[in-house]
Image (cartoon, rainbow, N blue to C red; front, top):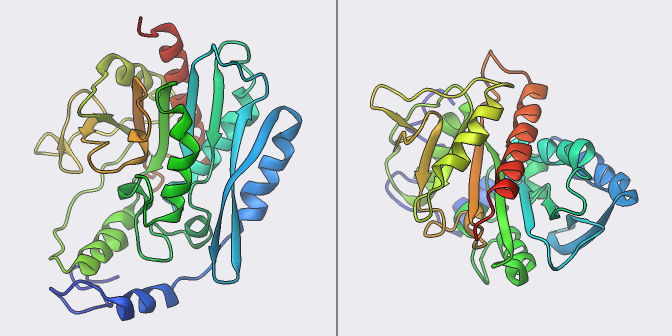
Length: 308
């Protein structure tokens, strides 16, 4: 879009109604296949893991099974390690990083922990390379019981029995140039608010939980990822996407209060990764590798530093 201050749907200053949401939905087109890219890979993991369908999203004639991959040797006396990807479907390395982790390292923790991986929370959005679901809702502001976003409600229901058993939860995301050119302008238009330009950081960073900060945990992940790709610097204000820098490559949000995915459980260690796939200094494979490095380091730290 040449002028992100003006979004081509809706009337400036007025929140969208049903007509505007329908107009937005009509413009969304399918670019890739969840079945080919995700379900086929998950199917091949059945030999080593327990694969379950934890829900189905029905959007018109399209039906999307929601898949979870668990350790086959699940034991109630072991901690639960949770990995989620694809909350925002357009954040590609979140999905493929989660799958790559399962393929390369999923069996490394057998007998030490219970692994639960949900590689693609938002399959409709994955296919359309979009942030929202068909109702123009962001799943990552709606993780609560009986959520209006089906993607969020299904994951909350899956994790409800495990809320107090999860030791570590890492949620895999990206920050892209399209955040600034498309999704933030669309959000402002949807909500009838003015668009305020921001700055996209070049590099990897993490989002900590403001109510339960774990700086040593976050730092361990940053150190591991820095061996794979570059870490984002703060801007001239000492911030990343409007939040003060706590540590190199680390900011914090009120994750639970905002209904973000990393706050679904009461995990002692929780973080949200943000990879920058549009950087000239990073390839798509590097982005996937960075997500895998983040997952492995988060797990290793959590298992080595279990709270008493």
